Length: 68
Image (cartoon, rainbow, N blue to C red):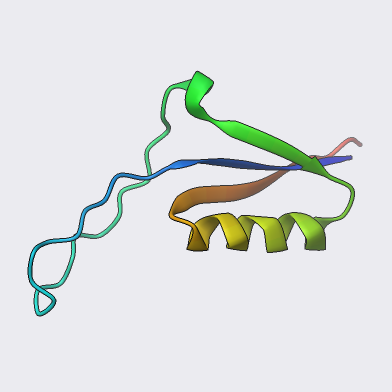
C-alpha cells in the first residue's frame, strides 16, 4: 500500500473587509504539472504533513492505493 500527499497552491479569495464573509473555497484540480507529491510510510506522518501544507496556504490531500 502506498500513501502520499498531493498539494497545490490555492487562489486567494478574501475580500477587502474583515466584516464580510469570504467566499466558500471551491476545490479545483489544477494542471497535473502543478500538483506536487510526497510519499510516506505511515498514514499519520502523511496526515501531519498535509496539515502543515494546509496552514502554509496550499490545498493538500492524503491519498493511498489499496491493494487487495
